[in-house]
Length: 228
Image 1: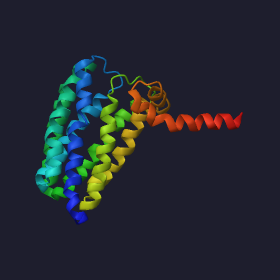
Image 2: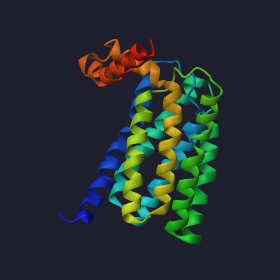
Image 3: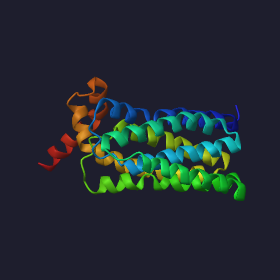
């Protein structure tokens, strides 16, 4: 089977995972009133990004973009509403941002077509992570963040990078590749690798987790023995 025939499947797989990325954060906000460490600005920008990429997908009639961003917009809006309540931030800021952004996207399409809309989507998608990164770098508590959201974001963005390369969509490639890095920064702070390894070794995630870190544990013990 030609490699080209796998490209649509890659896009649909990326989109399928993309649909799920925001779900863990929504569930966490529903279960736990503690939203410490969650950036409201990032949540609002995330909703604008989803809306922009949905417009991009509609303009291209790209099934992968439509599959990812129709539910993505819904999930992003729910996140904004819940974050507004949990963090006691007026929702009107998000409404004003949406009212200002929608005409800009429409104007971009009229002036430059789908390419300019893709540039806008890339820009807001990259910017949306910056407030969250600032919060992370300040070493603030991050209990309100759902780690699964950032794991899924990394995997989905990796697939989108491959899809963008295969279809020649430069905006998708740039946006997705940088998203992989930024999500990794947040994840490494929310779940430090050493702490995760210790939790796996202690059996917190069952036998599969213990087997996963077993080679690293044995290697470390061997290193310590040689050093002694």
